[in-house]
Structure formats: C-alpha cells, structure tokens
Length: 185
Image (cartoon, rainbow, N blue to C red; front, side):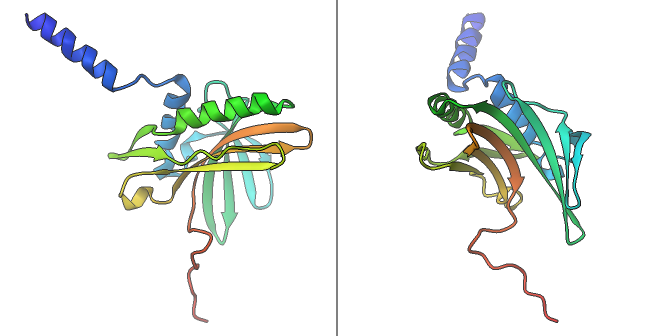
C-alpha cells in the first residue's frame, strides 16, 4: 500500500515537473553564475583588445558551436557577459526552425540563483528574412532586485551570407530610455 502511494506520488511529480533538456540544464548552469559575472566560467584567452577580452567558456551548451565569456573594461569597472553561437547556416528556413526551438527551450525556464527562484519569459517575435537582425530578450520574473538587470537574449542575425543564432547572458545596467547617473562637476 505504501509502495503504491509513493509510486503514485512520484509519477505525479514527474508529470508536473518536466525534465530539462541538456540545453536547458546547461543554460541554467550558466545563469547561476550571473551574480559572480561569469568570471569563474572564463577559461583560456581567445582574443585580447584594448577594451575587451574574450575567453573560451568552461561551460558549453549542448549543440553549440562556440561558447565564450567576454570581459569589458570601461571607466575602471570590469563587466562580463556570456554567449553561445548555436547555429551558423546559409539556410534561413533552417535558422528559423532552430530559433523557434531555442525560444521554446528558454521560455518559462525555471532557475534558482543565489536562493532566488525565477522564471525566464518573453514574447515570441517572428523573424523575417528581410530583417537582418532579430532579438528576443528574456527577463527573470522574480521581484528580487538582484535579478532585475539579468537578461538572456536570443538573436538571429545575417552575417554576410550566413544566418547566425546566439544565446547571450548579461547584465543590462539600465533601460535605453533611462537616464544615467548625473555627476556634479
């Protein structure tokens, strides 16, 4: 009797909590490093420029072509972001299918970051071949102030003759229409 109750309970839980794909688990793992600015994910140096350095990411997403951490240096402050190139193709229809599939994988992805629970969400925007850059920005649905600036972005862009899909994770300091800090001189 107890065994059958336990079996019923666990089968109900399995139905309520869908299993994560390897891509979703990898992305959740990356986002968990957001409070530390992805510094720990920075592996070997790929390229160095005066204002930025690209590192190979120690965490990769299943199906990705390349995953990198970028450190930007501005005004004496270091800012890190993370990105994965998920597909490079000449075929727009193939890119469109992958873009929609990745959107579905990210939409409503539940995360736990420093004890705060969050769910990523955004509205789907249908890309067109004429529009050379398409972007969907996911935000964390948590009221926690620490997660307000977290952004996960899915992009589809035309780069010369190829369509490139990327997933980016970063902190957006302020909205485009928001004023910056005013400094008295």
